[in-house]
Length: 394
Image (cartoon, rainbow, N blue to C red; front, side, top):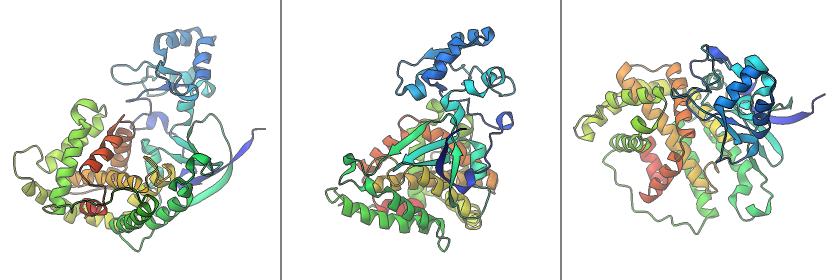
């Protein structure tokens, strides 16, 4: 009898199942397929000679491996960025021919994310999986957190934090549980709109951050912006350029969405940004803002899941305000793209939100340096302030 492990997970996780070949995307396309050491060795010891030939051809030792339990080996991706073991129906030939036990730790666990916080297991789902996003956004009810006993199969620990460890002495990381619970409660406060929830939380975290890190320089010159919409348009145009979407991004969906956004706001035309901002403002006022008021739960759920999964507010480092800053930028990035879709289509649907969250997550989470580069750029421009956040969300 398998040992049961007590796991805490958001309510949307229960009942999730991979839809395999029926999925409009695939977790086996567009990124590296990592193989743990035990599975790697099993591949070359299999008695299935046809599959063994395939393994010899397509599996190689990863010389840049960081962890034997994750990326000891790697599959050689085809030019199309497809895993070489996908068949014409986007189904895994390893699973079909050898069974589930022959899947690597990564392939077995995705899109599940396992964290350990102070000895307690936590489970959530990556939003780079379309079906996971649909499950997340399925119910209007606030997300609840459920504790239950589960039999764990192959899995990877994404992060393990012991707040009582001596290395965190004097660090705000010791307050993860308290700060994360406070933040989730703030985002689930349905008496306020999403923007006001984020702003209220930001002011509170900024105050806590200043008290925790009194040595940090918080004196910035006032942020001078012509108006919020012109500022937002310029900010995200620069972010798209930093991503190098048309030369560095593999996702055809993200490229197509970017083209749509650029066209929707005439961002490729040589005209004053203030003129283009009128198109952005119109898309917000007439389409996106009314949709968001009616469907605020979609964005609430996205933020709550991100906070739970990322040990918020310590998502990027041990600075409280940096974590808040980056989750706000990512939310605003998704909102900006949805406004671009609204500008072209004249409407927004729940399916658009599902697509945008999934494609954004798959692109940004698996970009080698965008998050860190973005944070450094914000600091250089002295945008790590609530004044910046207010201009970005306003």
